[in-house]
Image (cartoon, rainbow, N blue to C red; front, side, top):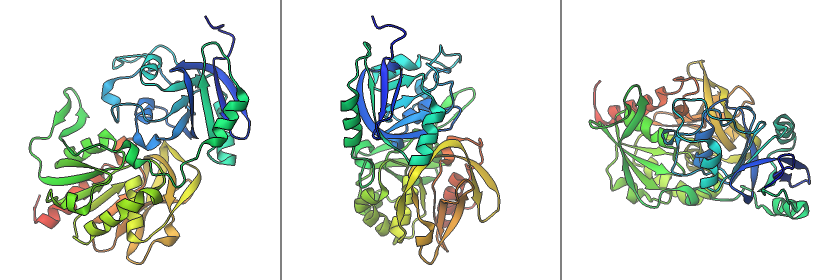
Length: 386
C-alpha cells in the first residue's frame, strides 16, 4: 500500500519543470499538450469534449469532482482529453444528479488525474510560455523516472500540423433526434422536424446536435471525410460544420474542397469552433496557433452587428486570422479578452460561423439565437413562413 504522504503522480514539462501530487483515476503515463480551463462547472463535459484530443486540462477552479459524474453530461461516449490536473483532490460528490464518483469513472476509462498541484503557478507558466508539452504519470508506489518523463514530454509531436479530426469522428453516418434537456422529462425526441440538416462530424459534441434538433432539424451526421457528393445525396436544407480538435490547416486538406463545393450550391452553412475555422479556410482566410488558446466558460464576445456582448464558452488553440479575411467576408464577432476573431459571415449569403460554443449555455442562453438564425436561413431558402 502506498504511503499517503508520498506523491503518487508526477507532471513533467518539456523544460524540465516537475510537479508532484497525488494521483487518481487510471495509473500509467501519457503525453500531451497542457492547457488550462477557467470554467467553474462542467468538468465532465470538458473531459468528454472531442476538441480536447491531444490535451491535458488544468482546471483553475479547485472544486473538481464535487458533483460527481452522470451519463447525461457526456459529450461523447468516452473521455477524449488525455488527463486532468487539479488543485485539490476530488471530494465526495454532492449532487442529486451524481451517478458515480469522478475517480473510478476516470480509472475505468483510462484517464489519469493529478491533485495537489499549484494550479495558479501552472496557469501563469502556460500564459507566459505558451501551452507546453508535458508527460503525466500515475504510479501507486510513487516511483518515477523523471529523466524519461522529460524525454517523453520533449518527444511529444505537438498539435501543429496534426489532423486529429479523423481520430475522433464517427466511423459511419447516423441520425440524431435527441433534443435539449428540459425539466422534468429530460431529453425529448424530435418528432416533427422542419429542416433536413447534414452535420459534418469533426468531433461533434452531443449538445450541439441536441440544439440543432431543438431548432427543428432532422439531423444526419456524416464523418469528417465526407465528400460534397456524400452530403448532397441527403438533399439537405442546410449543412452544419462541427467543432473538433487539432490543426485546422491539416484537417482542411480534405475538408476545404468539400466545403467549397457545398458553398457553390448556395445552401445555408453554419459552423462552430473547428467548423468555423474550416469555413474560414474554404473562404480563403488563414488560421494561426495561439499562445495558450481560449478555454473556459466566461469569455466575453462582442457581436459587431448589434453591439451586444455575449458571455461564451470557448475551447480552441488555433484562431482565424482576421487580417486574412477576403472581400465579401466580414468579422461578426470579436473576443473582448484579446481581440481575436470569434465569428464570420459571407455578405449576402446564409453562411456564417462562430469560434465559441453557443450550445454550452454559459450565458446561459446568450448565444442560442445562432441555431435559430440557422433555422431561419433554411426557412427563407425553402420559402417557409413562421
